[in-house]
Image (cartoon, rainbow, N blue to C red; front, side):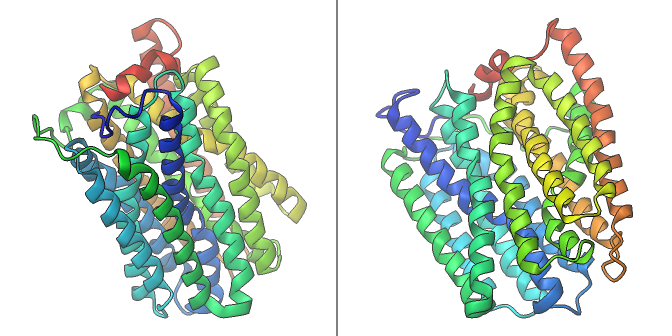
Length: 421
């Protein structure tokens, strides 16, 4: 992966950590917005577009998430050619414009265009350059730096729902959303101010690489790994999207309490991400992904046994601690299912594309299986548990294959050097 900053930024230096802070700000404004979608879903169902079926509304968050993840397949090669400035400016404009336009929406199709497509495309343009930049500036502390940058997701997932919940009853949906837009703009201005002074100018393109290598799917380890991500990500975002709805319609909480349960869940993902980094370095990437995906499946099945608000609080904290590490393990796992280091970038995009296909099915199907009138969610809970368990079974095959090939547990430091070559 190309380095798109001048060498005024030494590897593992304080200036490199400043770039990580810029990426953290971008993640807060992009993935943080996506983590907040559960709050919007609940508000849309109850107030803004109550006549629209919940499973239809769920497509907004689904489209936003799919575009955000799959966008890296396209923006990665653009970043590699040195167009980081153009990506950051375009992504900032589209993300802020989409949030501001959302404040004017009153119909489902308008919400889909503004939040699903515009914010999704803008966020997709931003996040790949930011995390690739951080990865290129660290060697010894790369995993920690990437973890720090991606913690912006949790911070945004804490900040945005609180602001939204406090402002909705006071100023209404339109101005509450505009305030979120101004917060997003401020975060991205900070990021641009940190990253742009050190950005390189566009370089002459080298060898053009394919965005998608179909032959790679015929390799047992990588093909099954993509299948594992497909099943896991059917389930991964569903709880975050439906936590407020479950709290309100199943447990009878107020809308305010439902919002704050989502905030607590997002807060729990912070230590969960650092737990993932620690597991990568101790028990190994492949084994860690296997263990935490199995624990996630057990936890998702246990969701059907949650009948009180207190137990739901406890369940949500465990969810953040156990499921958040999955997002840490996946990029660390890629080098171990690649034949050579030159294919890591392309395979990273392919793996996340497989995960995004799971997202396409996850939220709409889970919402369709939930009966809000009766407060019945058990069909959805069984679905996400089974999908996560299926992904665990696929990861078991990958783990055995990788362990047999390298003769030892795959640890983060064994493969991280390949991530940038």
